[in-house]
Amino acid sequence: MRILDQGRGSIFSPITPEDFRRHMRSKAQKAHTDKRMDLKTAIAEFVKPGNYLSIGGFSFVRLPMAFLWEVLRQGYVFKMAGGSRSLDFNMLLDNNMVEAVDASYILGMETLGIPYHARRLAERKEIRGELKICEWSNGTMAWRHKAAAMGVPFLPVKSLLGSDTFKYSGAKKVKCPFTGEEVALVPALYSDVAVIHVHKADMYGNCQIYGMLGDDIEKAKSARHVIITTEKIVDAEEFRRGPSPVITQFYVDAVVEVPYGAYPTNMPGLYYLDLEHLKEYLAASKDPHGKKIRAYYQKYFFNPISFQNFLDLNGGMATLERLRKLEQLHNGGENTDGFL
Amino acid sequence: MVSCNRRELLAVVASRYLEDNHIVFAGTGLPLLAVMLAKRLRAPNLTLVFEAGGIAPALPMLPLSVGDSRTTYRAIRTASMSEVMEMAQQGLITYALLSAAQIDVYGNVNSTILGRSYIQPELRLPGSGGANEMMSLCWKSWIIMEHDRKRFVDRVDFISSPGYLRGPGWREKAGLPAETGPELVFTDLGIFDFEPESKRMRLRATMPGVTVEKIMDQTGFSLIIPVSLREEPPPAEEELRVLREEVDPWRVLLEPDNFLSRVKKKVQGGETWVC
Image (cartoon, rainbow over all chains, first blue to last red; front, side, top):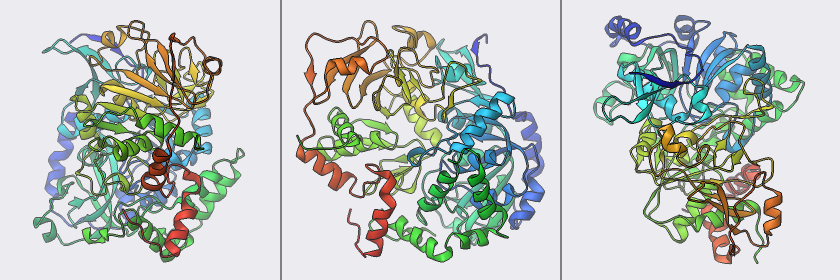
């Protein structure tokens, strides 16, 4: 197949389908074991500096914030998948923990506003070569994860074509050998680690998620190691009665129970996002000298001794109860807790 | 004329143009307001999809993110991002409604960087997000944005998502699906379409009380101005009533900044939310 055109972006994750197959061959033997552990242990065991990281959730919804709280304190530098990210990418960048990102939507927080500090840092770091950005779109990032989940090296797609996003991506344009039409090929994206926060999981790592799925199923299927943080660990028998889990045990390495583990982001059905906290973050990020954002991290991430302590700092159960009411407000007060 | 703010004007006007019985891909903010209003007033069978996976949710309260829980509450399906993008790729989705930081004469949209140099941008923006798929794969793309000279430019600094690229035939040459592309642009000053021969942006109607001179003054390229021009009728009382009382009574998207204080009052005051 002749390459008609190609983007100049770099491929940041070197893992190939062959590498992944070999890895999965041995991983399969651990599928049906008890994987419960605490977050510190999971990070120590499965997260290494320089890793390519995939984070679950979308924008400011269902982000694994307990993981983020913990890993921010380690200060590792990562490469990461940046398809519609918000707090996770911004916070890692604010703390100089990202060296490369496959970006489709970064440095924005949708209707909430702009994380100015992270944006200024990204501009400065890109010029100095301290942050490499490869451009993608939400669809092509989803399909890159999907190709990896399928175990194939690439997928042909009909977006990106003609745009500058293509020029600065790692995609290639070819003619389809069957139909003759032109398509963009996007390479499979394998991660070293995927971290996903879910509503419930059993001790083997079977998981259920309520609400949007984003790219999480594909991310779990295409990471060498998968850390699941979950609102609740349930008996494995529960999933046999259905509904069927969306992530299965074969892919999972660690199951960590962290109630409210997505706070201050939205956990569908359980608690809404904490607009007050997110606005405090955004306000701190406005200070051009960076003093206020450093004070923010000191107060919420480096001074507290645990994630529970971080929750308490934000008003603890009173705040969480407010967010639970806010979550139920949008559905006429109907109690979606029933799902759990 | 009933007084309203710019967001309300844009939501009302864009809602008038949506045809019923189609599938719509909408970003949150103005695009979503327009779709929800159209559903209430004249197009009840529009099916709304969100890029993070929500398909046809109930939406008694509007979302702040295209992935938050309100985009999936009582949805007919909560899918994945790839599934929704694949719906667009298969040709199921008619309308893509989105906003943009910058647009040019051929309807190309920029949401990646401002400035001449990609490596040393004047401003780094979020990137193409889901808009590249929306504008590449949906049949008709509509852009809803505020109008000013810096944002209506001859050539965007970066084509994040494709309009007609550099003119007629360019989408086809690039390999994009046939018969797709930007159809309408809604701004606080006017409604625009694309002249079929040249694919250049053309003024289609002025917003109430806006002169053609003002539009030309706020546009950084030469617009095609047809001989006969229509003025879009102002929002009717009923349209604004439905928008304010039924679509976004909490003013989640009409005034996102103050949304929280209003909700607080309602929660503490014991008022219950009725769909």
